[in-house]
Length: 149
Figure 1: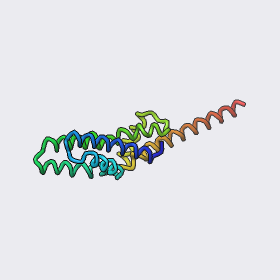
Figure 2: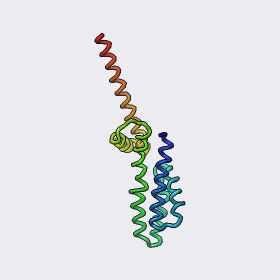
Figure 3: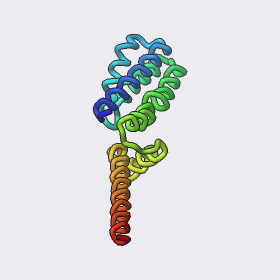
């Protein structure tokens, strides 16, 4: 699965989850806002917050504090986090040939070292290092085989 397809698939899922949350909270135009949330998820760093934070502010201004609290929880824990959960799964489908644990560790390590770009660069660096180790091992085996002959 190409990176663009993974990104679109993640955006689609975020939009669907957001639309369901908006509908459950009885926010008008839930489907349209879900679509906007999905599109906004393509924007790095702030993404979906561009949509759900103003909705939360609007709920607070209408003195609907319980709904606003639920919206914050859903926005942070569900809508905003879906991409962090699905990207490793979609990357695994993209033939990275890495275990899920190694993929998650490389994503989190990449984010820690490089910021948001590390989520993409971390797995790439780990995969390249793995390939380099395989090449070195094959070269050593070839040298041992030629030394025996």
